[in-house]
Length: 189
Ligand SMILES: CCCCCCCCCCCC(=O)SCCNC(=O)CCNC(=O)[C@H](O)C(C)(C)COP(=O)(O)OP(=O)(O)OC[C@H]1O[C@@H](n2cnc3c(N)ncnc32)[C@H](O)[C@@H]1OP(=O)(O)O
Image (cartoon, rainbow, N blue to C red):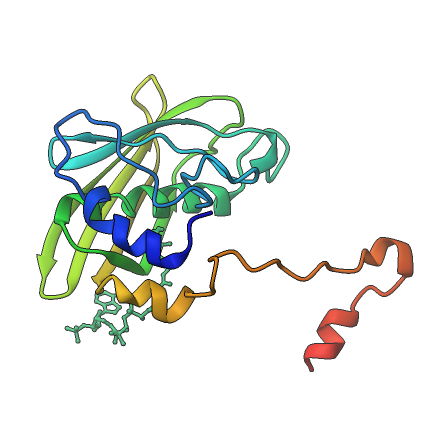
């Protein structure tokens, strides 16, 4: 993974300009939504379409909640990440302040969905965005809106600027083997 400095330097080039229909570059290679080097990721492929962005996406067994149905958090992840491409078109970095999802029908594992997002309005630092998730019968299964706040590119260095950008997460004990269920909650107290 490139270090934070490289990522920051690449912001301007990632922000475009991108022609209509162009495949947009991932936020970075390890991004949960769109990074191709994240084995847990959605590997979202996002294109510019007019003033908005669009992705066709198939959730897989890694994203299951109820059997056969995509976990609502996975749907929210993809929506949030797709919204995260709109700043490329706005021309300034921005981060999610609020995300709302209406789950209208179950989103199914193994089914292709079209997800479209646009900027609905802007007010100072606030960028209001909206999205739909539709199946290929054009039935809307989820809608979403969000408030993004524009930030300077140094925001990412201030808050995530670990050298190398990818700290190794602590390895959790496997409580199934130790019988220590509930210990994490007790430690927090
Ligand atoms: C290298 C490149 C990599 C680029 C990598 C990009 C990756 C993108 C991935 C997808 C997107 C993400 O997941 S982004 C990651 C998840 N999000 C975050 O980490 C953001 C965490 N939050 C923050 O850091 C902060 O809260 C900020 C910076 C967003 C804002 O902080 P702040 O400056 O103190 O401002 P704050 O008071 O919170 O609110 C800002 C304004 O929004 C208004 N506001 C707040 N909530 C609402 C609301 N529901 N509806 C309307 N307006 C609202 C407030 O009234 C205020 O208006 P007014 O008083 O200004 O009028």
